[in-house]
Amino acid sequence: MRKILICILAGLFAACSSDKADKHSEAYLSERVTAIYDDVFGVYNENNTANGLAVISQRNFEKDYCSKDFNDVLKQVEDYDKAHAEEDDLGYYESDYWIQGQDWSDLAMKIESISELKENSAKVRVIISNFGEETLVELPMVFERGNWYIDNFVTFGEYGYDEKLGMNEYISY
Image (cartoon, rainbow, N blue to C red; front, side, top):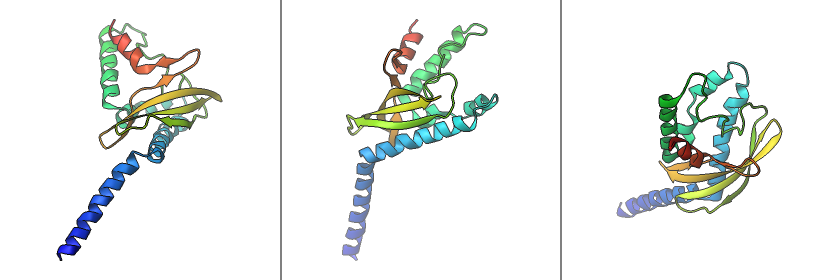
């Protein structure tokens, strides 16, 4: 009986260990980012109509897929906009970091690379396609709450932008 109990405990320990190892692999991280964008872009692509924004705004992709820190900064931006917004003022957001634009059509994402994979952080570079235009976006990822979450959206090129840095600068005025 004791041998059986030891075998069961060893099996449980191995399962827990392999689950943790799997979640910290490039393969798992790639699946996670793909699943995030499949969900987000699925909702956007299904709701590309005049009423689509109402459907999209009912989802909270940031809560579901972004880090606690990103959500904390986002909340500060929303509070700042409520306190300082004037009539017809858009506030901080002029475009959507998920889709890399204001409007969308035929959204797609492909992973370009995964780097700096550590126990609690990684960087994933994705190429976002919107209206056939491609934008390289780096997603610093953090491991928290038992999974990987997007901690920022950083674009490159002529119109490169660091979303979290921009939000922090905006609320510091």
